[in-house]
Every structure is written in structure tokens, then in C-alpha cells.
Image 1 (cartoon, rainbow, N blue to C red):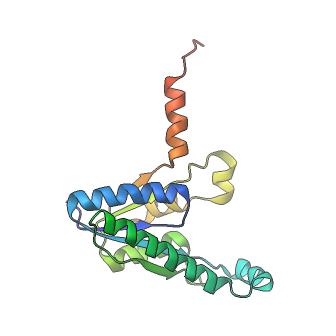
Image 2 (image 1 turned 180 degrees about the vertical axis):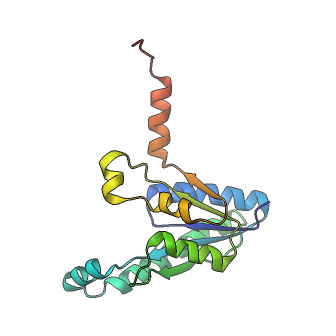
Length: 165
């Protein structure tokens, strides 16, 4: 049985889909659910962004609070308890996956549920994968939830007629 579930959120459709699954599992296990929004301002990106948008850090923190509030409202409708958290990546040597790991450890999570973005090929190599990196670092079970578009694509391929090669 899971009692403390961490669910990283970022406002994407994939993240929302994973959060739906986290709510279901939390409700079924009477577990506490912590939605987590991670603010990532790497030094190079931060310097460039501040030039064009001086309040970017505050805007990202506000976005985290907004998404946390929405998450708690969804949880309340399903009678799931928990408190959202906003955490910032350290500017020296930290990344999103490491920050999620630290938050999972701080929370005492016995399950982390997160979405994947289904990147393949060069996009995955260039952009990397927070979910993939986190799975390699994690000390507790991790449930990866594909986006609905990935599931729909798989269903279309399963239903397609097979051709002989």
C-alpha cells in the first residue's frame, strides 16, 4: 500500500493525465498526495531570460502556486488529502530530476507518479528526459504515465491491419 505519493506537475496535458492517475491511486490507498512544481532557471537561460523578462522567476513561482491551487481543488473533489509544493532547482549543479528526487526524499514518498512526453529519436537525445533521468536516480517505485496522445497513437497502431513482410 502506498501512503505518500509525489506527483510532479508542469501544466502540460501529459502532466495532467499523470496527475489524474495519481489521484486515483491516492484515493484507492487513502494516501497523501503531494503535487510538485519545479522551477528551473539554469544560469545561461536565466541570464538570457532576465534580459527580456526581468520578473521570470516570480512568474514561474506564481505559475507553480496557480497549478498547486488547481491540483488541490481537483484533489478535494476526489477526497484526496495533501499539500502542494513549489521547489526551485539549485543554480549550481542541480537539475529537475535531482530536485524531484530531493523533494521525494523530503516528503518520504513511497511512490512517484509522473508523465512522460513520449519523445523519440533525436528529440529525446537533444532535449533529454526528466522522467528517464529520474527513474535512474529514484529510491522508490516510479510510475510513468504516457500522455493521452501517446496512448491514442498506440491504440491506432494496434487496430491497424498488419502487413506481411
